[in-house]
Length: 84
Image (cartoon, rainbow, N blue to C red; front, side):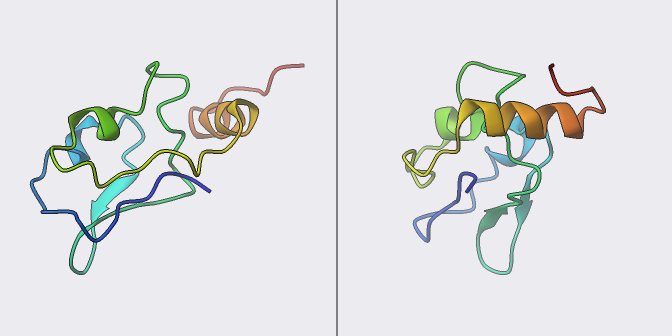
């Protein structure tokens, strides 16, 4: 499972532009994360940028996928072949 935004979200708009995969979008009442696009910034940054900038800590860590799963998704999203 990718990262998710909890109900504590205050719609401050800082997370959406930080996402390199454009996985964050405005949902019905709060921002949401598309699990098919979220790589937790693997391949781009050392840490999830949405978590780094969130002023209310509404994107908890701990439900993370393996590094291999995230890297595989990153490679798929960027059109690169998976490593041998």
